[in-house]
Image (spheres, rainbow, N blue to C red):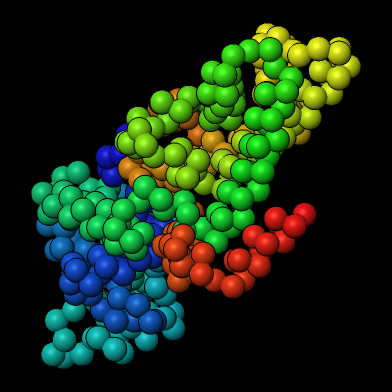
Length: 339
């Protein structure tokens, strides 16, 4: 996966969709600009001066990346808005380069200016901004996640109930393996890996390597709720099938028979949406939050949506310890236990 900001739209979005990083970047960079309409904006000339390029270079990028730059806050002022900006900044003593007669004026929001800096390859200043930007984004994510991103998945308010539910289905599956599969004790590890392969195309060892986990780390404690739900669906379905088929045949099943069930489940249209969601979540969030690339899921990578930064880094996100002392969370777990 190409993480070069100049070449990767996903990498650019993973910075620009992060409101916590943007706030820190604006405070840290101190690029100046004009206060207008509740935000800081920059004229084309100001953007050219900041990035040490000429306006014609900016025009080329505006032409090539028009939709992207507009989506991040570049806009053209006309009419009343332009008149309002002129009244604020154009007079006999003001040196801001805003023509008093031009019918329109293009301006960049801070976000759009960062977007431009990510794209410009002709400027050493833009390159320096990109480098500092990536360092700050990593620092902000780590700080907001409590110092380390290994368990950033657990900051999701839905993690604990989902993990609790998944553990219940896991027990059903291992009990079915014990009672209905004719295989030695190593069957538990083997079929855990086969479910992982079916859901997200990696076995436990590969997953730990990608996330740089220690041998003692438990894989499921690092998985997002979407992944846990997909695994739970797989385990529950297989547990039921195992018992039904074993009772029907009046014997324990052979490994090849369970293998065939897993193969059929992989293509089951009822499971496909959950599996697709799990792969997108794992591929995208691990790259965006943990800087971890799942090569086997590379074609599932999407940018991290803005709402997910609130989900894992915002005010409603909390560490596992904080959730465990919350009465509402404990009540949810009790209801799940009493089902």
